[in-house]
Image 1 (cartoon, one colour):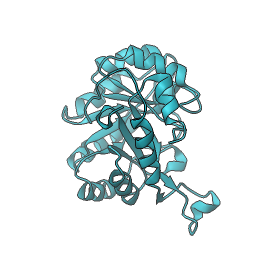
Image 2 (cartoon, rainbow, N blue to C red; image 1 turned 120 degrees about the vertical axis):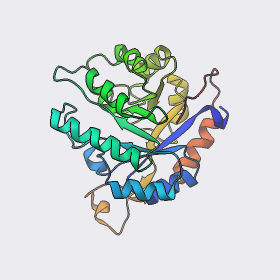
Image 3 (cartoon, one colour; image 1 turned 90 degrees about the vertical axis):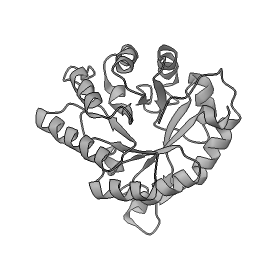
Length: 249
């Protein structure tokens, strides 16, 4: 694939990781905190500092707590406020998602997020998608609601294991992008691209700091590892897929 035919998104728990990833060639970062919790909404100070250092490509995760993706009305109001503040601070995109108690996409919430997000900003439905009852059937609905992409492992423990569902989602989507995430690495990204046809990929590009608690398993990686980004770009550049345009963001 030509470089303009695919996109690399890196999960960034700090401005330093975000800067290193973008300098290595990443197209954007998903800014969040608490990686050991699966990622939570970053502070407004972190968003502000990231945007001061990175003029574009900062997508902000909106997730108030760990655990199930079912939220109370109070939590939803909190998330809507976070969406508004993230946009006011210059976020280029938002990453959201919620489910109902019976395991369906929370469509009312999905619509509220779309209404509260400026059309000029990208909107991603996060990996709550992997826990919904009917992921493949939900692709069309999210596309109709105006979402730009879905971050998903194909409802499996890792994206390579979920390649069959990822492929089905890619084939069903028209404008919306299916972005594999979860267990994606420079070593498997080419095989994954060939197996499912995706053109956007999400992974972490950090490693443990041997001088901090992360080295003992107490937290998440916090030292940039930009070589992973460079390797992924080089590997994907050698992959040949049928032509399919990337969407914005």
